[in-house]
Image 1 (tube, helix red, strand yellow):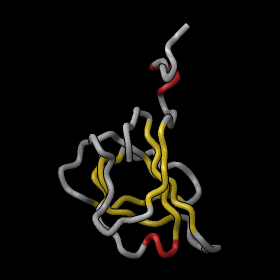
Image 2 (tube, one colour):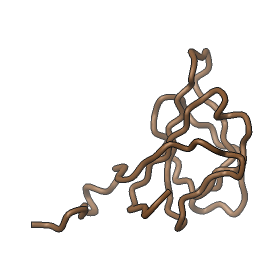
Image 3 (cartoon, helix red, strand yellow):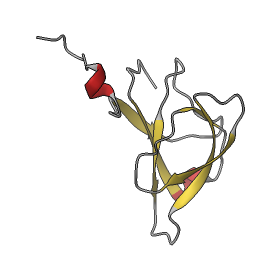
Length: 105
């Protein structure tokens, strides 16, 4: 039997095994050891748009750039960092999810 916490590569593909809520973006957001993550953006009120745009660095990016993120679904982006944003959390709840073990976030 496998040890507790072990997830096979096949099972890990596309699975979120660690997650949490982002409650402060004043300094941006990244996981403690550079783990990659995705996001789920949930509007706090009813909206007429389908998405929002975040400034992120993905796995192979050196600089921040705009990336559309669909509301109410996990994004396929492999994000390593979100730029500071003082407005998003006033209108939306933001959650992170990772396919990697995250010691603390």
